[in-house]
Amino acid sequence: MNNSKDKNCSSSFNLNSIIRKNILEVDPYISARIEHDKEKNYVFLDANENSFGSPLSFLNSYNRYPDPLQKELKEKISNLKNIPSSKIFLGNGSDEIIDLIYRIFSRPEVDNSIIFPPTYGMYEVSGKIHGVNIVKIYLTKEKYQLDLEKIEKSLTKKSKIIFICSPNNPTGNDIKRKDIEYLIKKFTGIVVLDEAYIDFSNQKSLSLDIDKYPNLIILQTLSKSWGLAGLRIGIAIASADIIQWMNKIKHPYNISLHSQKIAIQSLENRDLFFYHLKNILLEREYIKKSLEKIPIIEKVYPSSANFLLIKTKLNFSSKNLYQYLVGKKIVVRDRSKIILCNNCLRITVGIHKENEYLINQIKKYSIQKIKK
Image (tube, rainbow, N blue to C red):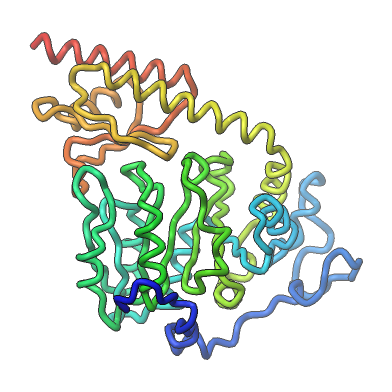
């Protein structure tokens, strides 16, 4: 890591130097559908599909494999985010993209990736699956920010990937932009910035600055603000060179035809998207203010996401509250076992009726416990 404060990594970053040797030598699987556009009325007899169709007539279009590069969907996302399609990769959820990043850049049993707990668990799980060493540098207490001094001390030549989640999951806060940019500029490996919850935040996405940072991969998704979790569409935004490598090693048809079709239709309905987004932000504030008035709640942490992290007072166990809520058919996430989240629950913003029921049940629980 270079301690110079003004030197940009773009002048020295060499992508091929950090790609695994076996990946550089991969001869990728090439589908004929990549080479020939389906819109040009070819007779496709290349992929051993059932040319007669499926047993259900209304599913006839599903007898063909989907576009392996999702060109139409990428064009919609490109227009939405003002980013060229060549810098967009689509995965079967962000989890597939995280897996691909490890495959491309980290050598099993040799390299390490750096994560900042408490954070999204799949960075660690996927790394361990690939045999990559995981270095944990905890976020600062209470504020949940990067500890730059500890990060710099931990870096070695075998540090290949840094994962930053902002807004962070499960804490909900934005990571300071200046700290993120500092690490991107100074780190000689890949920085993955997970912006899954960016649409709920006042902080602007770094995606529009992607040309400034050749070692940056931004993760976004249609699962959260767009309400399409069931389609499993994750988005990576990076340099065209990095995107090309992802396309080379991904599974040939990683996004289903159904998912592509529904996502395209959904992205055309931006008015409803903004309407839902507005309501989520209003409900988030409603839950926050309501919970802050309940005696057993010690803290409701600031959130830039579609969820809230809450902490119960020391003599009122969050685990007991969790079990009580389950008994009332309310499922939240118990985060009390996670570092720096002792006695904490993570609560997703629901529709108003659900949020009202949640708050009323926590109030009842609070009254019961205080009376005892």
